[in-house]
Image (cartoon, rainbow, N blue to C red; front, top):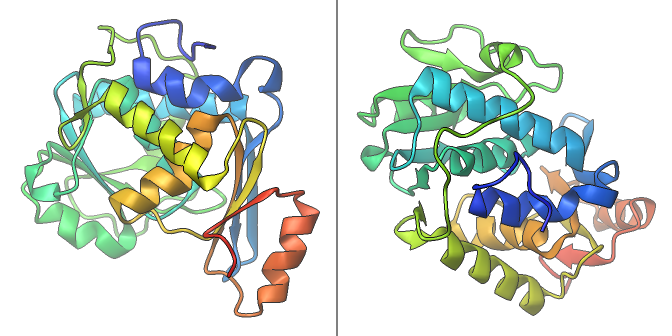
Length: 251
């Protein structure tokens, strides 16, 4: 297994490691938003860099450490993937209920929920394609887009995070990774596959199938949000992007 930030980060290495090494320069995430026309592509190396920057921000500015609990109120997006991996790099446990979290990460649409959750820290995401921050940011919230820029592209953990640590609503890192690999097999996602997905990540099943299974298999993801109503648009994109798997599978 290729390690991401040296060693000792079990779940991050298990999910992101397959995209590095010889395949590091290949596209790992290709993000389309059909409502805005946005297309963004990140290689394995670039994804690892963003993960490191986000991990440094979470640790240094939000005090995220092994045992911390984070809630992620974000849509299917490459930044969501980076901060999830970053949280696990810090040893945090992902929780579904923001009221139980120490740190909540939220987009503009769910920022009010984050701010009233009782969390010690709230990180706000504009998800802007050009890296612009949120306007009118509420007091007490950290603007991810502006703050993450100053953090380094390498992350060195203070403590190793092994597979026995809680990673997701009580499940250990080993259990999360095993479940992701099992789902990859069930979905027909194999190493080197190019996966076109319109799946949302706002449920445990959606996140596991739409993101974690793809990463664990060593596949790459073409994520489409706000897909065009004309199914032919998605069919053409699957051909253009040379996709071999569709999620959800077309009827």
